[in-house]
Length: 108
Image: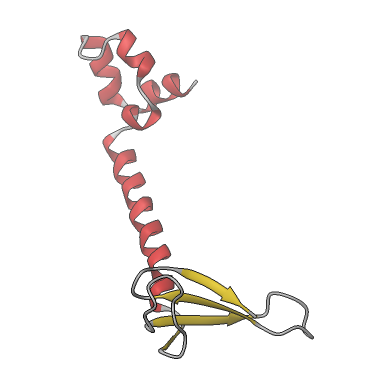
């Protein structure tokens, strides 16, 4: 199903199949990523870069501290956030990120 859709939407792939540049056996083994058009590949790359940037934002968010010590590298360069993850009468959970080695842990 994805091959038919890719052949319909990707003019370059369709032309390569018709001219023999891409054989039928190679087409049958191609992944959807390999069959994607240049525009689709650029869009996917953009989404991957945005995802990486979003995941790296956690490093700069939070409160910087030297009061907490990483159990992995034993450095005191950490960032922490506190969130109420349980009921209101329970203490807040502290999420800690070591800025040196990337180790994460939590405590109440």
